[in-house]
Structures are given as structure tokens and as C-alpha cells.
Image 1 (cartoon, one colour):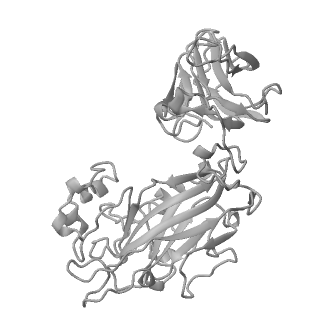
Image 2: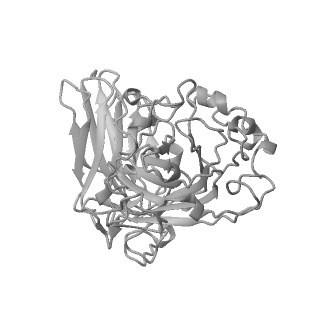
Image 3: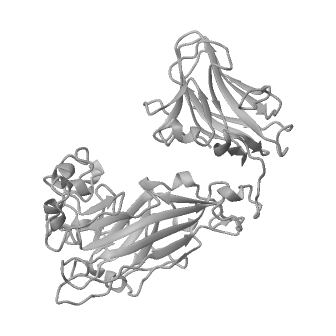
Length: 470
């Protein structure tokens, strides 16, 4: 699949995609997501002018699908041409590409329009399931005017067959023990035909969540009432459908006298998409749990990782409130845990409709703290909406300045200060009763700018270490 969402062609070129007179664009005419492929001006009928060329694949049976549109309606002709290119070991070129064969052309009607077109093109029978490597080339041609074209969400059925380490030539041998169509060397689960890839969100290393638990009041603002390091692994099959979601976490600190809980909503994903939830720690009765392990009464998929942080990180002693927040006090050992959400069993999705990797991105991640066993008292990241179970009467009380009409949530009235932070790396948090601004002096300017300035406020070079927990 080619959706340009990396924002950098070099990412796809490293996986053997090739581009001719095309670039990645985030202009307003992009088709979906944040990026699309944009051609140069279409001024001739040469198939070698503006094009996208796939890696070597073993084409399967089915349809090539993609979305395309024109940037404007100026021009006397515009078309998209599909060709397949066979592998030919006898040619002198390093690419070993044989003679292209044209198999489909889509012509824009005249007068031109700029509406998005959904193309679906059948893989030719002569190459489908042939067991031989081919490339698919998509060319844009046209005359008259200066209109460019956009392409997005290009999906080609088949098995990836290029070797980036060998000048992107076809792989010499495919070893596929589980028969899922993925080479064992690329398969994270080579003995499991239902699982193929690990897809970490946002990164494969730990990221840090920090919470203040006196919302809607700002409190002491030391952001150590609950500190959770986490990473999310979306385990997918060969078709990029999510089989499992692994929420891997460790509670590092509980600098609070409250018994706080922690949950995650994946916004836009239905609860019916999950067969079961395992590995969570729910001891009390403030949550109503469905048969599949998700929380009942919510609009979107919501799971509770734990309902009481004290059971995750027991009291370490030393006459202090909280755990792992007071410098010099006894330290509690931190352990890694995993909550597993199963979305497919033996290749069958829970509600009949698979969730694809593209449907579950970082925008859908909505973690929240539950204050002191009171279910409705939720604390979310700034501008992340509350769940359906939140107590809405608490908004716009004390220091909270939420405004549903502006889609503004969990920010203070005067200067946009948040109650929860998500950092895309593992960071050190403030010591007990130390305002975060004393540990990270650039924090306030970052928050007041709505996240536009001092975006590296949390890095070690911008911190005052003696005010952070060691």
C-alpha cells in the first residue's frame, strides 16, 4: 500500500518504491490523511513523464485500488495509465525490468473536474497468482493547461517480493513457514499464519504519561500523581488487519494520596470489535465491565488497565505519601505489564469487520486517569474529549476552561495549562511538590502557546535535574 503518510518519499524508496516527477504534498488538495502524492504539471502523453512504480511483487488475484483527483480543471486531456513490468534477468539495466505492458487507462471526461475518483483495476489474469515477480507502474499523462494530479491509498494485491538490501531486486528465495504470504525474514510471527507484523504506536520505545489528579483545580502541579510509561503494539496479519492490541505499560510513580485508576479509549473504534481483554487489574466495583472485558456504557472501545494505582505500585514505606516521588525515600521496583485486546480469532474479526492499521492511529489514542475511585472524575490529555461516563457538571468549575463548542478540553481558563501530558519518549518527572515549571522552565511558554513554541521543553538539555525525581 502507498498512502504517503510518512510525509517523506525516502521512507517508501527504502522499501523499493520508485517515483518519477512526483512528490509528497500536504496541500489542501490532498486526498486523505495528511499527505498525498502530487505529480508535476501534466503537459505531455509520455508514460515516462510522471509516474509511481511499485516494488517487485508477486501479484495476487483481485483489484488494484486507488484514489485520484486533479488540482484544477484546466487542460484538454488527463489520464491515468496502468502497466505491469516483468522481471527480465537478461537485460543490461541494473533494475532488470522487462518491457512494460499497458493493461488499463482511465480518462477524465471533458470538461475536467476536480472530484476524487475511486479507481478499481483488475490484476490481469496473466500475472495474477503466477508466482513470478512484477512491478506495477501508474503513469499520469495529459495535454493543455497546467493541472497537476494527486494520488493516494494505492493498494496492490499480492506479496512483497523486493529485496532492499540487494538493489531492490526480486528476492531469490521466499521462506514462508506459516504460509501467510510473508517472507519469514520479514514476518515477526513466522510460525503463526494469523499474525505477521508488529506496529508500535507512537514508537517502539517507551513513552511517558504524567497526570495531575486535583482537576478541575490545578493543585500542586508537580505532574507525578500518576506517571505511566507505555507503548502500544498493534499486531497485524498479512493484510494489515489488527489481530491484537498490546498495551504495554509500567507504573513508575504515584505521588498522590488518592486511589487513582487508569483507562484508555480508542476513539472511533466500536466495542464490538474486541473478542476479549486480558491482563488488566480491576479489583473494585466502580466499573461495569462487558462480557468481552471492555467497559460498559461508553461510546467507543474503552478498557480499564487498572482501577487502583496502589495495587500496581505498592507503598514503599519511609513515612511519605506516594511512591517513587520523594527523593531519598524508599524506592519501589517498577514492573512491566501488558493488557491484551484480541480483535481476531483464527483470522475471524470479532464483529465480522476487521479493524485495519490505518483506522487505529495515534489520533485515536485517548488515555485518562480516574480520580480516587470516582468514575465520573476523568482527567484526559489537553483537547482530548471525555468518555461518555464523565461527569460533565465538573467542566468550567474551579480552574477548568473546557469549551465543548470549541472542542477545547482539559485546559485551564487563563493560560491553556493541561492536567495530563504525553511525551514521545521516556522522561524524568518532577519530585514531590515541585511545580513542573521548576524542573522544566520552558513548560509554561509551551503550554501558553498551545504547543506551538518550545516543543522540546521536556528534553534533558532543557531541564533542571535537581528538581526532578532521581
